[in-house]
Length: 560
Image (cartoon, rainbow, N blue to C red):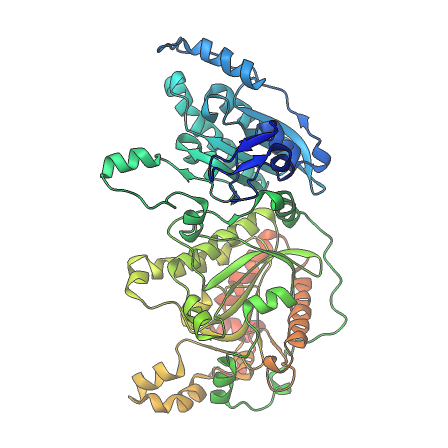
């Protein structure tokens, strides 16, 4: 389907369409929403501000390294593809601006021998990556390919390694990379640069995979589901970050590009909402705080992402095993400062609680969080985590997928991050499932939050052999904010409006935003090495009488 003719037939739904209408709709069928192929030039004009771009020089490469011939010599196939497309080969690389942000783009064109990856394509894409590296400019790759170009033999295979190594250099330099998956993206392209970028965006219905559907069905002698390898299929399984319709692509890519952009740290908030003196807090009723912390009326992570942050853009998937709905995360701004924010999400209604697994993350959730924290570390933006979970999911499948390893990996990763990390317990902080998002430079909590090694009910069942002794266990465990501040487990307590954050969610969001701003301001100016050292020392002190006496804790009077 193309918009050049007066009337065209949609190849997906078969509906006859007026060509100019299709063109105005960015070559998307207005009847069935099928996203049809674009030429590289069309794609660049749609993505670039004002449709303007500057082509990068085309590198000189080997043209027919094997003198390959089947029914037609490879040289003749190349000449025919060049004549039909007007392109030197299957990719067009350019400089442009997207929503005001400068970017280097490499856009593949499926018309040129199925967008296959040969020496010329690999060299052009690698040269574009090297340009992005030299200029420290974000890179966007738009992929549409059937795989490596067989007419160039093992040399085409080597392009997978070459482009992947070039992406590694961009990672090491802290340059943001984004893939836009167009339909189809298969084989050597899917198994190299298309899936190695920081963020993977796909158009609706775009297919992505290593082996094609027909090959798989012939191999396993089974019929695959209709949605197999589509963007929707892959999003559910944690392999892509988001699906974006063509009409919103430029705006969404612009938001991503701005997320990695630097900004001057904002001034500290005029007010100082944090309580750092335990004596200011009232004598606690620990069991009452447990019940208030678990109250489903309290604002959730998603509520705070709407009220306390600006421009949250959710990213999905761990790129390994799945997508966990109990953990949400993505880029946002806090008073104009770019941050990576990650939190546990419970929900309120029975349906929401079930869909979010009651806020209990699976290994995929912790691995997703780890991926986003690594991206924040690469881009040099702070990490903010919002903790609200009864604990990590205790199911058999979670154990089979390595729950302990996933939590342990997060603890180690967070200890070494070179960016500021601030964690806030907004409700319930349950055991290692909470700590896996709370190895931070500053750990804060709302006044009615709780944080504990085990639930009071679990402790009561083990110690007193009676779950009804949970209130007694809550007092013994010192789960309340006042005792946790006294013990140095948290660095500050955020007051709650009225009896609870649910009494005034907007005010609670304001208090959270100010507390985060104050904590991040305290960390401004520290180098990456100093931030990591500060975080390690913070946790090194727990249980060390010497460090506490030296002034690294708030509970010196408890040392015998």
